[in-house]
Image 1 (cartoon, rainbow, N blue to C red):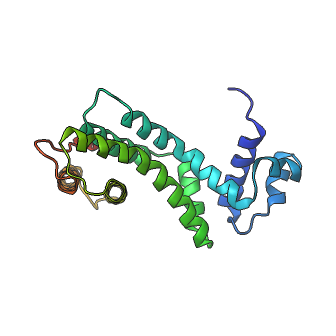
Image 2 (cartoon, rainbow, N blue to C red; image 1 turned 90 degrees about the vertical axis):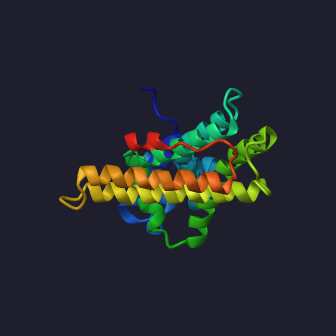
Length: 220
């Protein structure tokens, strides 16, 4: 593996420090000192401490964003199949154990700066909404979706994907607790939840002669 560049080193050091001692309690000096570079080197890459946290969040989210754009630009898929793939991609990514995601989630949850937390969420939302709008536009052109306002509907879909993710995460956490949820009961509940969200997405988009199939999520 090649040597990490200075910007990546600063981001990695900042995330570790933010997790260990809190975002508000970590001065910029401690970040660049940990990497062994000057204050000027820090400001060469970042405008502020808020800026480096936003870049860390965007860097983490880039895999999701890139994946959503790739699906949206696939000329061989119908719109409803693209939506299926985007939903599955996001849920699988966020439900797969990952150290960096857990670190970042911990930092953001504990942020006392609510404006910064909202800014991070808004930036991710807008990046994902862009390919969702492309998919809905295609669905309207194909005559398979009835969408009165593509931006608002993309936003609604985005929030429902988040709701599905949190619902699945809660269910998985119950499975990991001793004797709280038997495996057979878990499987039945997982299928039921997914079926409900398949219906939710189909109704939101007024899908005609098609359905959203998310059963692949049962194999997470």
